[in-house]
Length: 133
Image (cartoon, rainbow, N blue to C red; front, side, top):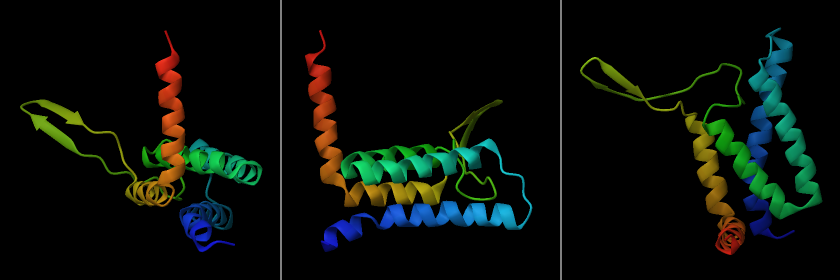
């Protein structure tokens, strides 16, 4: 196995460890999983299958999964902790979307390690959009 291939799989390994540890805690401590926890498990299982079928598509799907987790639409931690910023102008408060920082870091790491695959698919998408009338 090439060392670059193994290194590019490190964020994937971390994400799966976090998801399975989250479910271990949920089951052992008698917590009730929310729909966000269930979606995380289902999407992780689908992603494993896609990785075995096609590596490049698995990398892209993991990027999408990490983006969804970073936006706090899916939970990979037992406690649903999110961070958001707000700007207050007089009586008006403008909130930013909630962000999960560990997942955002893993997304940036995943994107940095697999930038060639992302670049290839972004070029394909760009060509597809240019062909539209």
